[in-house]
Length: 576
Image (tube, rainbow, N blue to C red; front, side):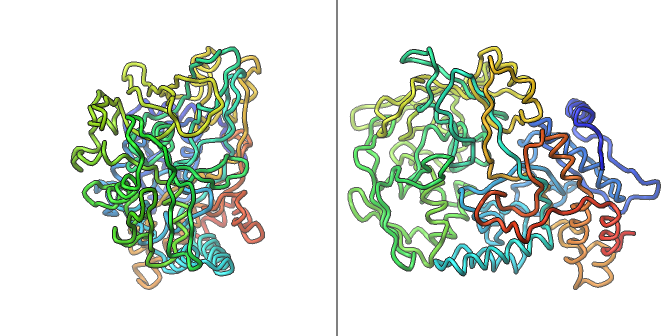
């Protein structure tokens, strides 16, 4: 199939963002549509709007009335995160489009797709409650036996491939255009473990006091790590904080010590003794202690703070009784059972927060506090007096200097007392909010920025980037683009309102799976990659990074683009 050109689709998508919140529905058939779906398409990336528009049109070819809206994630998040499973007309959602990935380089599907991770405490926003998947992800994450993990991962992938709870469109490559004078940028962004690390950037000719800017869109919804939900949040808060473990870089992706100088794990994987790095200071000069680690875990697991990381920590620890301070520089956790996520999430993806600075902030004040918004300032009492902060306080290489609402920029100064040696010459840094791909490339050409988040999708425009002002870096993204379904929706989720589901309630879930499978067959993945992603990607099948060791290349063959097969599959649910 050769679909509409990228330029044609982009033009229509861009126009829709300027129109009313809901665009005209796509209804391609003369006959009455089988059912209606409201489709939220994020408006922060032109190419994604293009393949979102194309996928909506393809659904309409199946007889589905699709009502698209091109909206910011700030409009999607409230509907998605409520945790009540309602459909779009009732204040919830039907389907939406997003780029996603796990919180660790090692795939951890238990964090996103276990029925124990439902919102608002967890990140299973899709309400996936599949017993086969539940057992597979529990076995995978809960066993120290590599053979058990391997078998469980195979089961997870096969079940997903057969039922397609979400439609995985493709696995994109990440491309970043940079200032040719910039060196030291050696990784893409990957929430929450990889974000701009300008402490290691060098700008040729910048002397010992260079300034650098990194573009990202949209503005952070939250700058406190426990509230951050997207790459845009991590890009802002990441440089300020540290985790207990960190990755050595994108090339090897190996975990190494950070705030934890050493970690000892018992043979059964239940007892973890964490020796903390000594001599580390918070930005206000106070000492980093085990009390800060315990405070971070306590706060995230306290329901009053409404962190969407709460379920993940509760799944590992069970309760706050699982960890305790066991020395001046030591904290020990005794888990109810082995949990892969202890190392892959708790130790490596949870930035540590300062107890002395944040414990006095009431739960109902936390989201609106300067520590989260970077607006204004606040004073923290210290042993030597007081400290005025203009944002979050961390142990990281960068100190917050506030958010400039006029310039739409988060400002940082380099931490002169950072505990780790750094190699760059950048001493002042900005994360700036620039909305479009064209605008970000223009800013790079004009010397206003030095690099950008890969979500700008510069791949299709690589040929327009002149080496005199832009150097293009390519990274395997370890991410995927997918169509998300509300799996409590009575047609595409539970299937109870489908013809087959009404005729035989025991087959309702089967009917819903037929509909999702039909939509998958109707998506021209190769065309999307070639025409709208610049050829940088691979067709999608399951939510496992394409180049990850866990991806089962032998089993996971690309889904065919076949409209006849799509219609025949839809007919199995009673629509034909």
